[in-house]
Amino acid sequence: MDTYNAILKKDEPHKINITKNISRIDLTWSSVIYQIKGKNVLDNLDGYALHGQVTAIMGSSGAGKTSLLNALSCRLEKGWQTKISGSIFANDIKLTNELFGKIAAYVMQQDILMETLTPRG
Image 1 (tube, rainbow, N blue to C red):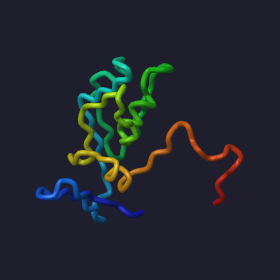
Image 2: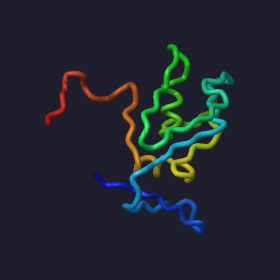
Image 3: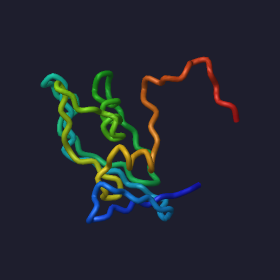
């Protein structure tokens, strides 16, 4: 399995170089807030998911589990009725949609694939 390390250049913070070096990614987030029409869907959340550990996100229906996963995977979009704030880091590097796509994968809850299709091994 390929492993990656993200290197952020200080003089060019918008450019991220991914090199094959490291097999561990620690994900941390702090003060994550997501509002829709003035209502907090995620309200000042802090947390972490460490490499080599299974992390479970549990809660009742409507508790914000999917919204948190969408936020952590940079899948939430700002709009005129939505606000997103807080910090999300992968190995102490600010997580962006570009970086997430290079180090991880996430299949959203509402899959666009047909239910009748099955993978072949």
